[in-house]
Image (cartoon, rainbow, N blue to C red; front, side, top):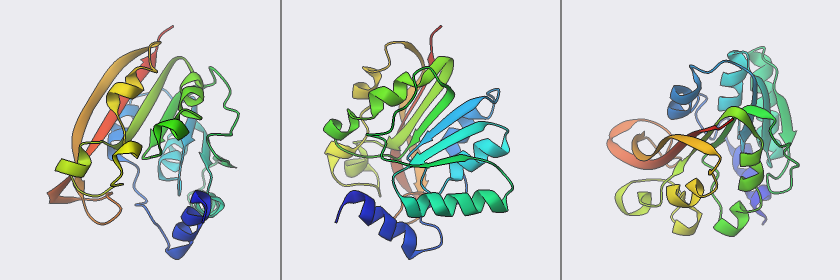
Amino acid sequence: MRGKDIWDEKYAAKELVWSAIPTEEFVKKVQHLTPGKALDVACGEGRNAIYLAEKRWDVTAVDFSKVAIEKARLIAEKRSVDVNWVVADASKYPFAENEYDLVGVMYLHNSKQEQSRWLPAVIKSVATGGTFVYIGHDRTNIQYGVGGPQDPSVLLSIGETLELLKDFEIEQAEVIERPYADETGHGGAPEMMALDAIICAKKRG
């Protein structure tokens, strides 16, 4: 079964795979920004894209799961917000360069080889003065945290990602603790902590 089919099946199995609440650290990084054009890569059921749309951002949200996008579209309609929902594989999508004032990538995990097919293009899509936010399970999470993928080759490496951000001013690049609730790793049981890598950077003019 292909990755897309696996995720379609997973998204179809329950009402929500992830929380409807936007990613906490993402909100902290973007809540002070002036709304403009935003891109949410691997948006899943749309919680971060919908949050941005409610804050008057012009949002494009991309995910390769048709099921996830359809669920996101329905949630957005119920909350009376508009998002440009796109069903597409990030490795094949033609991201426009210098297009977005904000680009967010949350918990998209694949190998370095697969990542090379989409991450450079996603980074180039950030407009001058725009913000790039990348959050995911850190490689140290396997040994010291809980939840998330157990294959270190698909976990986020801050150092490797920073090599692609030469044109950016790095505002934050560190490993943080996040309360863990269930098998998804998205939630809040304070006695169990997941380790996430977070990178926030602004493109120089």
